Image: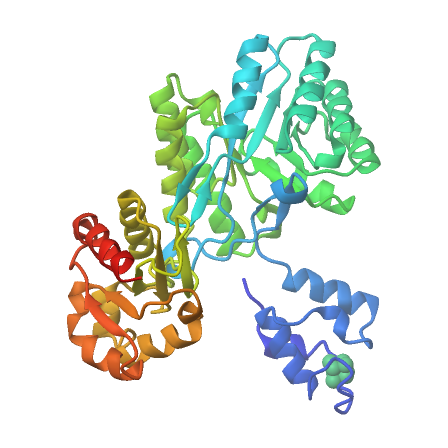
Length: 456
Ligand code: SF4
């Protein structure tokens, strides 16, 4: 639960505004700390004890954990709300592909290729799976080590190492420790022996217990040892139990502020479901029900895409429409006589227009005006796509240096801004009313481009 600034200020030194923290008073600093806008170390007069207490109070209710490194590092946790409509979810679950060391070479190669190649451009973002989970099942340690080495060399993705055999688990960890793998599972039986091995080469740790309550002594023990990058598995045996357990953990962390359960979770549809369809459906449930790492036994493009789109939808901030940057975009290789279109920056609008333009094979410029992520007609109705505003944007966009002609196409639905836009452009541009729908671009644009070329 968030701590109030009025509580924090009681712990600050209260020196007459020394301002060494960069804020005019202790109270101002406390308010900033409470809102996450400042860090404890800015006040040099805090005792170690107070500093530790403040850090504990200000820590996110669900710890941020990073699996992997570099560009492929995956951050999970750090969530603040139970329901997406309350604010937003922050770090989307890591979609993870399982490779068993019992699989043959062709199967392993195939999955490595999948993790490298399965990706889908989707309204300005690239949807793809995140992690590989390597499972020691064969009983042959050398075989497992060979798999870990092979995957480590062949990919840059983050790894989850799964082994009931602690020697194999930590030997595998040492092969790829630079990749910050998640080592799983540490249990009540293995925890004491595991602690020195975790500390010897720290990476995130996956804890498994028989039930949510049995996780508490494990997280508490590891926290006492300074090991806090934890991921929880309550050991649910059925989907219904898993939903109950995930819900319990989330509510305990966020509603009750119960620190021993304030960690991200891992879920295994690969072990819960009996066939691939049910497995993907279970994965879909875990996206909604707060798992932070979701492990699938296999997927292909057809089964993965709906999961990735669902994840995108759930983890998109509902307060802000998806939008693209305000600027002019090039489709193909446009030149000085290519058409110029204008539209708004709602991602869906932009990608519909750019796809329609691309399909005509006519190189063109698309000037995208920031309309706070609204579609064309809504933006106009909301006063964010008036002729004046579009004119100001066109002038500062730099498009005038890219084309010799002075013709700009506006969406047919806002034909009424034509006069105002021509005035805003000092009557130097002719405003052409384009199609009302993007489907009309196919017929409209080639003819317009031909006319421009003819005049150049
Ligand atoms: S540096 Fe510390 S004591 Fe000084 S004003 Fe800031 S919070 Fe108060």
